[in-house]
Length: 441
Image (cartoon, rainbow, N blue to C red):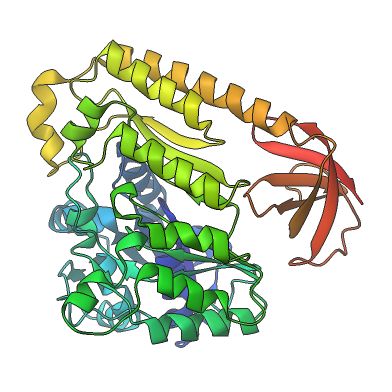
């Protein structure tokens, strides 16, 4: 039987695409390989949000391509870097057999077959009316947590973001297809589900404007919530400008909707937000947080933050730190600004913040974030929390790991035969920056 190894860099959307490729290739008999050195087909699924994943691509190819000298192996570059720099990669790496972007994921079987005859390059975008969402379910994913894409692409024009270039325009998936995939996953044992897209809040809006009659995002949440057997419903990623009161109301009405929301803010400064073209203000964001917490007092918020954006002053950064203290995010993805090719932010580089300054600000933000996480976690010591079991801890023998509805990682001693997907009660005894530890009740 042929085997495939997929190395994935980047976001949950890339993880999802990799699962779809594994599912489609399984129909041709491909089985998962444990390493690139064991595989007949090696796919590296790339991310271009920041520079580091691109560097990882070149490093990974440096270890894989020499294998072609000693054994037959098909090598493919997929994902956002392939979409953005496909022709360049095609020329730079003549030993790579396939180069293709996210819109070609549904063609993986066809492209692998074609690569036996000639090299393949496919970085074309599909039109809004013809985009094919793959429906295959990854047969090797036995997780109790599943992912279902509801839309792809983005029509926002944030000046720092490469997504519109690599993922194309926003396209919503038909609700009937979404619900069918949700039911299939739940029937297979998935109890926690995450709906994913570049901007889930705008789901269905373009389709409705064209008369397609699809539900809005809040209506979709309510329909998925009613699927029998589903315990927890999550979604990512949200754009604050597009989150209406109808979605906020879901936190009041839908008990399965998780106690966690990732709500990227990027900066706490109105001046920087304008330069980023985020189209909301600090006041608007804080008002949204207030309404969300009124609807669900237990809601845990996490966020994305960019420090050192071109033109960011000490005062602007102080505004970001103060927003962190006000909202008390319990986690964040925080990064120094990284200019991406083809983004409007390149036109702002005359006001570039020196790397040394940006790095100092990043460390200050991350110290404050870590302190807040510890403080918030300590409030849970002595409480009993409901935990969905993931499986054995990767670091401690005799310890199981799970997550709360608020996306808190909890470690607790337990028998190793405790079934994944089981809900257990754990009394929290210790709190750390990224995890909780306790005893099963």
